[in-house]
Amino acid sequence: MEWFFLIGAGLAEVGFTTSMKLSQGFKKLWPSLMFFALAPLSFWLLTSAMTVIPLGTAYAVWTGIGAVGTALVGILFFRESANPLRLGLLALLVATIVGLKFVS
Image (cartoon, rainbow, N blue to C red; front, side):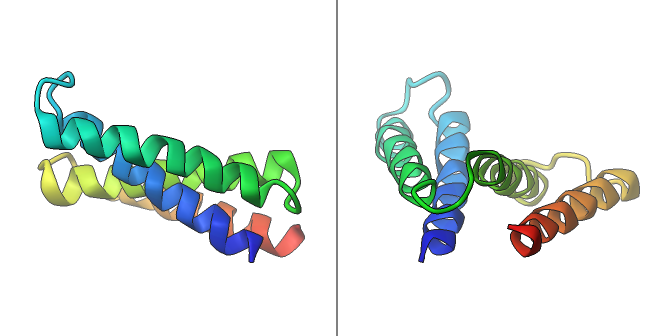
């Protein structure tokens, strides 16, 4: 169950970073409200996951999901670079996250 909390925490991190971008410096109401809802949710889910999952593993997976997810949102919705090297490095990060799951 804690791994589901951890995945949810990472997805909420993608949501709050995307909302931060869309809020344009917290000047737009709805994206700002989404940020202030998703950020605490992400931290709560991370905290819940860390009751069983070791701190280092939980933090690495949480930030990894957030980094990969946010990078993909940037590529898909904000026209950020999708060059082969960047995509390969993101794939390497995903492989590392999966690897941490298997050794924990």
